[in-house]
Length: 123
View (cartoon, rainbow, N blue to C red):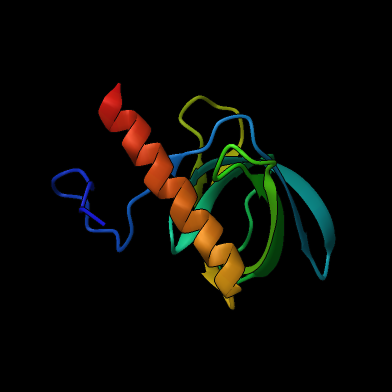
């Protein structure tokens, strides 16, 4: 895939915005809901009402519509990497890195990213 990262972006993977996607997050403390902000092949950013402590293992469930077919449910083990306040004051954004992502889920995410970048290029 062509490298579409902005100049100066040192992150390992291209991120694409995710609109109107809710996610359920669970860990040993229970569950919380959040709003997906962006996704990459390596992880996702999620908006929640409170910070998730760094290195916390989280199980994320969310739906992605990678093609014109019905959205596909993704269930992924993730690890919290960082949290910071949302600049719009709506909560806290946490970066989650995927761990042990299934090949099928990885393929759906790759297609979603590729389709999002194609649509953006055509706009």
